[in-house]
Amino acid sequence: MDQLYQNLADAVLLLHSLIVVFVVAALLLTIVGGYRQWLWVRNWWFRVVHLVAIAVVVVQSWAGLLCPLTTLEMWLRGEAGGVPYDGGFIQYWLQRFLYYDAPEWVFVVVYTVFGLLVIITWGLFPPQKKSGAVRQDR
Image 1 (cartoon, rainbow, N blue to C red):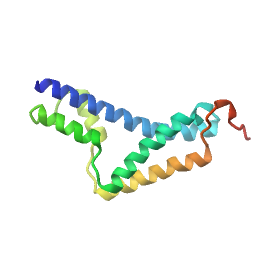
Image 2: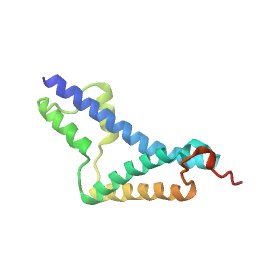
Image 3: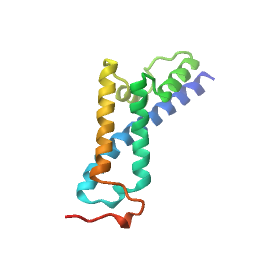
Image 4: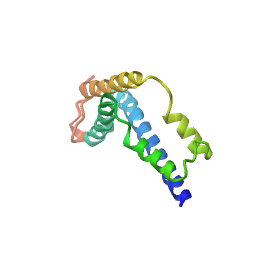
């Protein structure tokens, strides 16, 4: 049973990492794509999902709450017998990618600035419900 919990914890860590990559990459792609006039970066649903994802992070940081995925992963690792973070290669590097030490205020500021950048991109490159409705200003 411990191995099942360990595997589930690893899956949560992977999911968490993919969400982080999505949030960061989506902003970068929106900025680059906005300037290069890639129509897909103005997709309404893509942008709404991105905005909601970073909004959740910002609200959690301001409220001083731990991410539910982190909480779930830690609980699963505890159920697996408190296995420390020295597992497999992928787990090891995903762990280093996601978790780092800094004062809490640093995270609040970083997440808030990132969230503001996402909002700014809504003004610079507004999403469109229909990809054919995008203006081609030059």
